[in-house]
Image 1: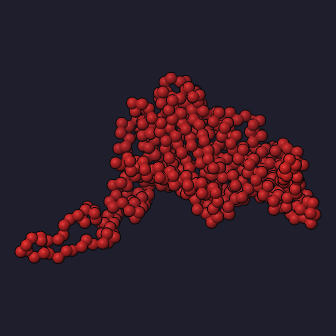
Image 2 (image 1 turned 120 degrees about the horizontal axis):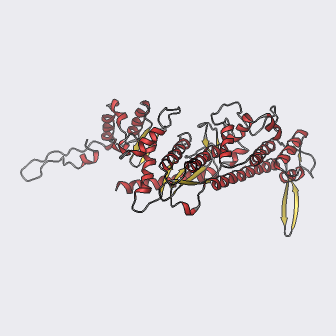
Image 3 (image 1 turned 135 degrees about the horizontal axis):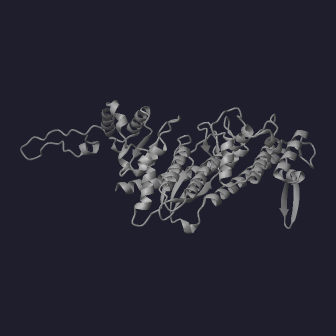
Length: 464
């Protein structure tokens, strides 16, 4: 098929030599009309649209033709499509049997030319793995998983980690099988733990990552997996104290509520009949409310029973803090009031957080003003008290999350002397645009734009 540009280069005027009549000049049809004709000609054969496994083969490449091809493939239950060096993944929103099994992993890993197979996330994974070990000098690799919320980024990252934990350990001849399984298990167990503390149910996604993460899978000289490290970015800590309408808090709070035994509830001062302000939509059933899976992951990563107890006491203390409410007072020296029930919640929070109750109350109700070398204590209004309560809860949760990431890294990270190359997996927020946007959305969207710019630059360079 000739492109509009090619057709514009064909001379349509007649000869202009002396003695010959000049043929009238016929202008090309408008580019828009010409392109529309090409689109219609391409789309007329609907039965063949699903056969395009690489979008660069689509002609013409327009939003309409690309989307029609993806739609046709989706209807045929084909969810992966190449776009040059990029893989487009469509979320099927249902389990697909036999798509990610161990046999499928082996098929792609041991194939001499995996690119000849149908598009799959394992092709990208295997290509990166071979790029590390196949160069004259091994080169570190990174995979960027991007897309809107609900597109399946978290699932894709999981698949990549499972693939590398399998193929980079399966050929081990230097290490005992116990060591291999321990490394693989710890790397994979970091996933459910991070998701429990960093993911939440939103309007668009029941398991939405509310933080960005970069996982570095560490390989030794034989390209075997010996460890990993995790870096996290922009945890949405505002969700702890403020959940958007019809959305939920982080998974871990609901896991505690649904999975804790009566003995644990008593220990955490969480009677079954108590409701928590910061836990909306408790009745919603979500697959990721798997308390037992989280506990098992903690055990495999080396978080013992005593540390687990401390973690859950902190989480329970945050929830109790959220039930503390303030009201206005006519007393100018104390412009807020605490009812008896809120005092009880504050006492429980203090005991769970292992701090004196009066100090906790002072922290959220009194401001310290500096005047030169002197400090002045100023009681806060009820509105200021509420803001300080929320800020305290967010800081506590963020610090707990940071501690957890550090502990995971200490558990799965290999000594620098034992690894020489890595494969990175970057899982970042998708583009966000809410009714009310703030600094978090600016940072997230700016990061997405920079990644897109990098991708376009890399793609154009690769095509040249």
